[in-house]
Length: 59
Ligand SMILES: [Zn+2]
Image (tube, rainbow, N blue to C red):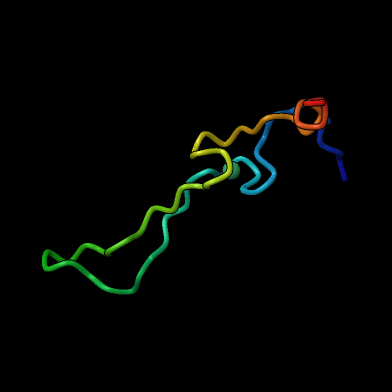
């Protein structure tokens, strides 16, 4: 199993998938599915995050 490089700035919470469409199961009047788009709060939908090393060097 390939190990991810330490310096990649992929968000750990969403693993790079910053947005996810959730099917609610309901449909709109025109027949299309009603979906909710969830944006990762950690990376604000960018899929990238600040490296943990930068956070630990605040002192
Ligand atoms: Zn994220």
